[in-house]
Image 1: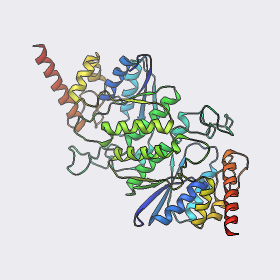
Image 2: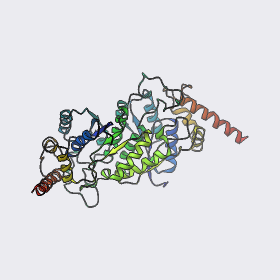
Image 3: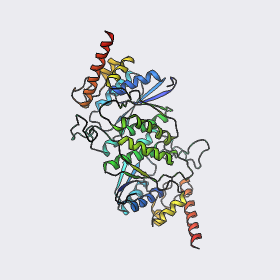
Image 4: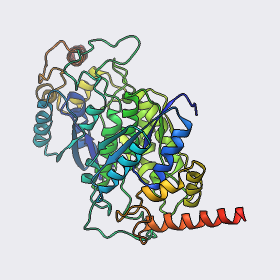
Length: 224
Length: 224
């Protein structure tokens, strides 16, 4: 990382991307945020994201990629008629998977970044957690980075500070960055659209809350 | 190619993608077409594409990716205030280059195809011609193919029947496919939005018309 460079963060207002936003603020001299709307059931997400960015004095831009949710209606995040998988089915991805989503997000982010003279992209994807979404894996991100560079004949660098961190380690990073309380209080991760601690029973809440419990426990053990 | 498979063609109603459409009809048992609108100055293009697909009995779907033209206004194809480069500038791409366009098109095409159970994608990009757009090169398409497969954990195959053909060889292929006259008469390649022979002086017309002249001349020589 070069402190004198700029970075664009793919930002949703959730725990992961908020941690990335503050990670980027530490490592780059100029940080901007791009948020995507794609027919999510909970548009509160966007207001949450906008407020966090404003409080952090980070320029915020919203891009409408609702075409995504028109192409494939088999995802429970964009189609209320589908009941959300609470666990990963044995033979396929959970129906919270939006095929191609991260690829579309990062490609539009790169196009936007290039138009601003920014070539560092930051995304909060992680392969440490349960879902096994293919477009959260390190191999995918590296392949995408090469493809973006070839597509536009540029030298983008995609940063994935959370790639190998489980949720507990993401909480640890936010603590190191001095924003654990902010992330706890201000972000929205819950699939049912409830801020902070969330509904408590959807897969995203379970992961988040168990991660926090684990991290706080470990921290307590260390300081004993 | 497996004759019993389906293919989705990225289709604009121009010479190249129309040739690809008929190439696909020869090689696959089921062919569909996807067309992208992104704020082109000439929406006639879309009507031309729709008619060719209808005449060929190919299901046609239009996707709106006008977000593309909102992100980067430095392209003469989407911004009338910019005068079109007639030649490739020495130090950069011509301003007819829309950064990331083919990557966005092919990624949305793949998402759409997957939702229909189609895993063959056909695109008319070629690296044989003058412009040198990075997202028309074979290396880019191969990298994109890998990235798409990783993103969705599928086995897409991107077919590029025109990759190494100059315009004369594209005319030759349309002749082999029995559609040279149709392509000559029904397609729109011209940057100024004039069907068939076009305006005659924009870079796309020059390339198309010189290619046709060359091909017809070569054909005449052979049959002498």
